[in-house]
Image (cartoon, rainbow, N blue to C red; front, side):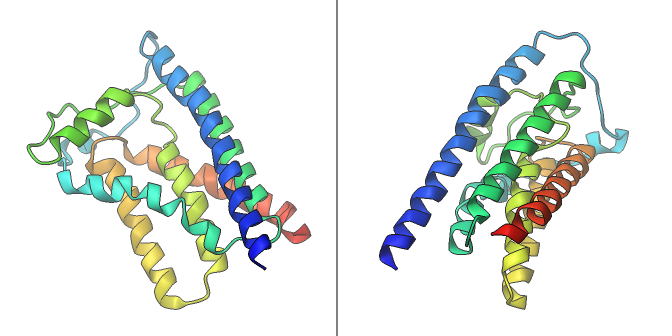
Length: 204
């Protein structure tokens, strides 16, 4: 039993490592490339520019790192492999859209007094492109959809639902994304998740 658990954790770690490498080889490069393009679109509603920056929303924004760990407590059979496929296909689709339809942020705000260093670090590593669809929403959606699929307890499902709302809201109120980025990110992740778990899930 202990051996099986160790194998599961190692498989989980290796799977996430592969996704991380794929992300690092694509997302930053496209972001850098887009900075020099002249065909960048503004894809948001006018009213969104008036939405406030809420500094503490950076906490749920970064809680995605904790979220990524949770599937390891639920996975069984070939679930790890299927989740990996979902991440990779969502990444490929999103990167393709980034290239054919580059967008940029409509927000023009200074860093808040609180969490100033955190917002500075975000700006240093993540340029204001690669927005539509939101990979932050896409990746977190895959995890949440899996948790909803596996979890049976109502209170935990409710907790995950609230957490999901906070993460989705955080990309707006940290001024990292716009509403259509959220909708498209979720739509892609949901479609990929349904296709892969209906195709491969039955075999696991």
